Amino acid sequence: MDVTDFDGVLVVGAGLAGLSAALAAAPRPVMVLASAPLGEGCSSAWAQGGMAAALAGDDAPALHAADTLAAGAGLVDAGRAGLLAREGPAAVRWLAALGAPFDRTPDGGFALSREAAHGRARVARVGGDEAGRAIMAAVIHEVRRSSHIEVREGWSLRGLLQDATGRVCGVRIARDGETCALRAPSVLLATGGVGGLYAGASTPRTLLGEGLAAAALAGAVIADPEFVQFHPTALDVGRDPAPLATEALRGEGAWLVNRDGRRFMPDLHPDAELAPRDIVARAIHAERAAGRGAFLDARRAVGAHFPSAFPTVFAACQEAGIDPRVEPIPVAPACHYHMGGILTDADGATRLPGLFAAGECASTGVHGANRLASNSLLEAAVFGIRAGRAAARRSLAGRPLATTPVLSVLPAADLANLRTAMSRDAGVIRDAAGLMRLLDLTEALTRAHGPSGPLVAARLTAACALERREIRGAHYRSDHPETAAEARRTLVTLEAGTLSRMAA
Ligand code: SIN
Image (cartoon, rainbow, N blue to C red; front, side, top):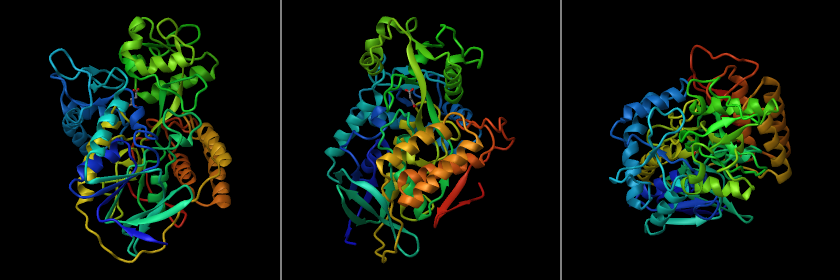
C-alpha cells in the first residue's frame, strides 16, 4: 500500500464540526476529506431550528445546562453540559462574525425561538428555518479562503491506519475505485450520524456510520450507541429522506392533531406539543399505529405568515401539494440524530492516541439519552473548535504502520434490507425479539460481505439496545416498560469482532 505523509491534521467529514475544527487548527495545515462537495451530504446544512445558547438577558448558561441535563434522562455529563452552555454564546457570535446572518431583533440582539424542553426562548435562528444552510455557507466561505486548509472532495473513509502500539496515524480512503492511504500526526473524525441506516430519516442517506465503525474496529471506546433520536415531525409525504417540519413551529404554537382534529399531546404531558422530543415522537407513532394519523396544524399559530416565517418547510409542503396556511401537515417520526458515538474528552480526544472526534459521530457526554433541541449545531461548533485546537498540537510520530481493519462495501440491495430492518426493529419502539432478528441480519450480512460501516454501526446500535432493558430517553423497550433507578452509560469496545462492555 502506498502511503503519503501529511504533516498536519486530517479531518474526515465536512459538516459544521469538521469545518469548525479545520478553522480552529490554524496555523497547522489541515486536509479536509469530504465524501461530497462541501455543503452537501452533511446534516448540518439541513438543520432548520438553529443554535441554542444563553443569549437573552433573562437567560444564563446554568439554565441552558439544566435543560440539557433534564432532557438527557440522567445520562448527560454535567461538566460537559456546563461547558457547552458557557461556550455557546461565544460560538454563536463567532459564526455571526464569519457572516452567518442570524435573525436579529430591532435593537441588534439575536432573535430567539423556543423549542421543546427549553425553559426559555434561546434558539438563535436564521431566516426562520434556514439556519443550517446559512451557517454552513458562511463557514464554507471561510474554509475556502483559509490558506492552511486543503479540501479534497469525493473521498470516503475505509479505515484508520495505526502503528503497532495502536496509535492512530492516518486514514485509508477511497474514491471511484481508487484507494489510498494518508499518514498524519492526528486524525479527526467528524463523519456525522447514522440516518442512512434507517428507511425514514431526516438526514442525508449517505450518513452510514463509517467514522463510528472505523473507530470501533480500531479499538476506540463507543458510548451509548443505542440512543437514536427520532424527530417527531418529519413530513409524511412518501419522501426518503423526509423533509422536516421544524420544532420551532410548535414553539410558535402549532398543534398536533389526529385525523379527527383532536389534540393528543395535552393528555400526555404538561408541556403538550413542547414535551421532550422522545415523548412527542412516541405519541405520534401511537396515533399513526392506531390508524388515527398525526398532523401538525399551524393554521392558527402561523397561518398566512408561513411562507416568510418558515420558507424551507413551506417549500417542502408545496412540493408535496400541501398548503400549510390552510391545511394540517401530515407528520411521522424519522431518524434524526445519533446521541451515541465515539467517546471523547472535552477536547475531542478519544481513548486511542492520535484519534479525535467531533460532532454527531462523537459522544462528548452532552446529549445523554435524548438530545435537547438545537444543541447539535452548538455542540458541533463548540467541541469542533476544541478538538481542532487539540488535534493541531500533535506532531508526526513516524512509527511503522501495523495491519489494520478495512471497511468493506455493503451492496445496495443489502443496505436497503438493513435500513428496513433498522426502522422496524431499532426504531421508536423496540423489543428483544426485533433486536435479536436485527442482530441475526447484521451477522449474516457481515459473514457475506465483511465489516462494512453500516453493518458495524447497526450491530453496535442493536446489541446495546438489546442489553439496555429499560425505557430511557429515546430508547423505549416495550418488553421492559420501566426506567432503572440508576442511570448508567453504555461503554463498549469492538476488537477482533468481539463486543466488550466496560465499566461506565
Ligand atoms: C428542528 O428544527 O426541529 C430540529 C432542531 C434540532 O434537531 O435540534
